[in-house]
Image (cartoon, one colour):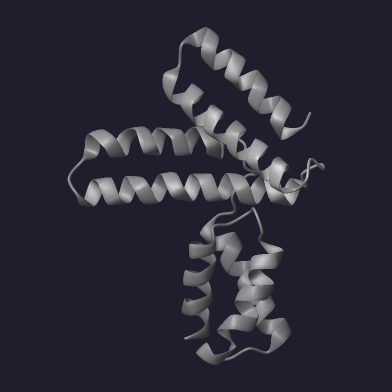
Length: 148
């Protein structure tokens, strides 16, 4: 079952349950998928593109929630976090920090990287290997920690 089919089924379920937060989140995902498909010239969207899209939507929601929290608007931050949680259900399981650290350590050992000058090379390989499995910010933090 494609992501678009899963989203459509979840939309129906959310409508029946009158779950407005889920419905709003799922409609945003459906809209973003349709836009991506239109930009791609009506061809089939790859699973990697779908994952990147979902990650971007989650990141947008979390960034908005952080901004609202900084401004003391918890009433606006809460729905953003709830929407992010709904969208995250469609992402593959995220690796723990320890698992990410093990992968990054392996990459550093393979490439012989040392010091912050090698960060770009390590980040490139780590991002490619951990695509969809870990947040870029988490990967970056761990790479910095291990290289310094």
